[in-house]
Image 1 (tube, rainbow, N blue to C red):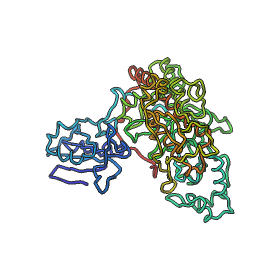
Image 2 (image 1 turned 45 degrees about the vertical axis):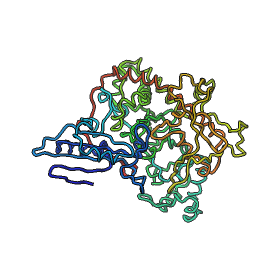
Image 3 (image 1 turned 90 degrees about the horizontal axis):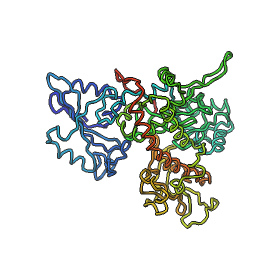
Length: 573
């Protein structure tokens, strides 16, 4: 709502996405041109960025929460006061403050008579970052580094399915059977609606009956069942039909570049959450990772053959990046894995947190070949840990170091042998349930948080400084659990998802229709150990990042001279 409190004065409260969203850059630029003073009271309370928690983990409800409506609204809000004098000279700064917690409405009112300076931080919005009105944490030379898009010029948005219940499945055979049924001309649309409701739900841009009629003529194609990275560490199968809208966004231009030996880095132009956790590496076709739009940057690009030349794979590097590599006599693979190493450095993520919310991540380039090779070796280790098909010595295969041996061990509470035939691997502790349409809603499940036992603490040894002092026993059901998943491993997010918890939410027996297999139960153990190993690489990754940032290759300032709003593809939410 907007209220004019006098000539040249505007006060309003609104969703706070306009404070730093790229699509609002022009609006912020105009405010700085025409107003002489701007004050922002950020009331937070956002479900998506902060999880409605204060920085110290206390409840942070919406300012619109009441005794009768405790939810309030999902998005965070801010109050803006803008003053225009006559004549106006504009301003190069805004005054900004955070207000957190349950008493924010009272706190805002209580400070109404303040001096307008002492309670606020003075922020000078940066043009290169899109003129954010938020405080923006960024390293001193960050804007001199190239963006990932300047290094790897070709990327593809992830697939958007919209009809998961039809076109994707955890079990390949089940997906094949369902698609054969859907494409069987002897089965009526009415019967398909009963068997697979999502298949016959007409939506914007998708005529269900017409699409099925077209596809029945084509028939079932086995080769269109592809491996699919649905979420980080969550690999499934997808029926990838490129010519209709069976997939909401099938990305037919993406599919040809998915081949054995190619790898992809996931990134976004704007990080939704405050904490940066992008940089997942996959070797398969991938989803757009839920809310928002992830892009995937390949190591190689497939070049189609013709009568005169065979098909080949070319490196996906820009001319300028190739010049850099040529100066070091280095390969494009070294650059790819160096980028992986930098993106996963905790120090990089923390030091440049504000900038990483605004635009594609920027990467410091090592000034010499030896440093690039060392960084790439770390990046390879990360890619290997994220590759669930790759057996990693010391992580997924013996011998394991002591700090990993005791992590995520599956066992019965009574220590009796596990018996899958008796339901020991049935996941029914409330990790997920069916939501509206084909959505799966996460549940609380059952965990018991505790300190490490003496034996666990002894095995962790010095790793406790990274993995933490608290751990969880995570239950499949009332008598079987994965023992000792460190709390920081359990909370570890990749691309916006708490990895293990998200994986479990889709495999509740009531949703999956069966218990876990032995391999799936072991997979949770493997995930826990891989994430722990990734976290334990943190100090080496930080040292590597800080060396690259201290004396980087002189790429030069490449920030925008004119900031334009980010363009989002239609219906890509």
